[in-house]
Each structure stands twice: as structure tokens, then as C-alpha cells.
Length: 291
Image (tube, rainbow, N blue to C red; front, side, top):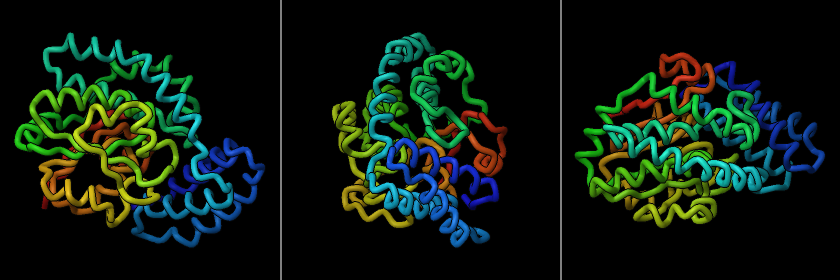
């Protein structure tokens, strides 16, 4: 997805937020330097995720903290886990378990801290649970997703936020119940509150998946070239890549993958919503076929 004028203020809010939670007292310097770097990178047609990756890398160096969101990630996982029994009952009572599990997986995508477009604390999630679940999917290409799952023996599943990944477990179980091999894809290094290998192991994703591979490096969403050998090995035999969240959408929506890509996300900002041609706040299932 191409960057827009809206991306600047959003990115700087995130820089300020994470600089403060890092507690180093260097938020002024972080915002100053990151604004300068952003102005250098912001040119017509550049990918929003690529800019954000570079700016966040600078911020992390200034903070001298390689995982400022760690405690927030742990808290998000703990709070989300409390709602798993309710989410499971929702799936169990549905006439279409797979579709219900997709709806459940979308709930956690609200756990996007510090941007000003979602929530700023895991504690805010509880009061939104019922309304999020009842919202459903307003832009829904589920039928195409179901067909792609049916025709694929190996499926890659790219995670987004901690907390959200607790609900992803329930969708993964439904896919595996169909006899599919499911391989998880996590971030190659801590970035924002996204799932890394350490985070995945902490909540037992290794027990849900057939294998976990990574994007190979510090990146918002996917880097332009994923160098992780495990990912490349699994991609060669996969029939489908399911991705969660806006960062994966921003990094892959204009990139041609060798397999169909399904984006499961909540369009939480105006640029992403405009790119998808939906209102802000819409839950989306969107399929990108191989061209």
C-alpha cells in the first residue's frame, strides 16, 4: 500500500507513545529525529510499511530498547486468554464453524497500541469484546477463502499483534480440523506489539501449529524479500498465505506473492480503509489471487 499524507501524524503518535513507555526520557529526541527521517523517506508511491520500518528502527536505536512493548504484549495475551472460552462457545454454537472462527480471529485486531486509531492499553479490550464480536464482517470474501483452504494442503498463517494471536489459535484449530498443515509466520525481531518467536512460544502457538517460521528481520509486516530459509521452504509447498492485520496488508497488498493471499483485518485508519474501499472500522476478509 502506498503511503499517504495521513501516515505522518499516525506514525509520529506511535513514536511518541513507544518512546514514553520505554521510559528513557528521550521522547523529544526520538520524535525530532524520526520526523526528520520520515520527511526524507516520504516520496510519492513509496510503501507505507517500508517507511514505517525505517523510522521505527531509528526510534528503537534512540530508545536503546529492543522490545519496549514486551510487558504490554504479555498483558494483552493474558487478557485475551480470559475471553477464549466465550469465543469458543460462539464457534461451537455456530452453524458455520469456520466462518465463526474467522469472526473471532478478527476481534483481536483491535489490540493495536499507541497509534491513536485503536486502543492504547490491553485493559480497554474487555469492554469492547461483545460489540466487536457482534459487529461481524462487513466486507466479506469468506467464500473465496473457504475455497482456497479446501484446495490447499499447506497453509501459511502470518500473525500480527500479541493478544490477537490468542484468538488466532481458534481459527487455526478449525483449519487443522480440515486436515491441513498450518505453518505460523512471526516477526523476525521484536517490533511494536507484534508476535515474535518468543511471544509465540510463550502462549503455546508451537502446540497449535505444525511449524513456526519468521519474516527474518525487523520489519513492519513483511520485508520486501523474506530471507528466512524456513519461510521460503514452506512457501514453496504452500497453497495459501493467510495474513492478519494492517501491517501485513500494507506490506503485501502491492506485492506479488506466488500463492493467493487472504487479508484478515480491521480497517482502523483512513488510508487503509480507502485502499480497501471500505469505511473506517470495517472488519475485512479480502482475497488477493495470484496474477
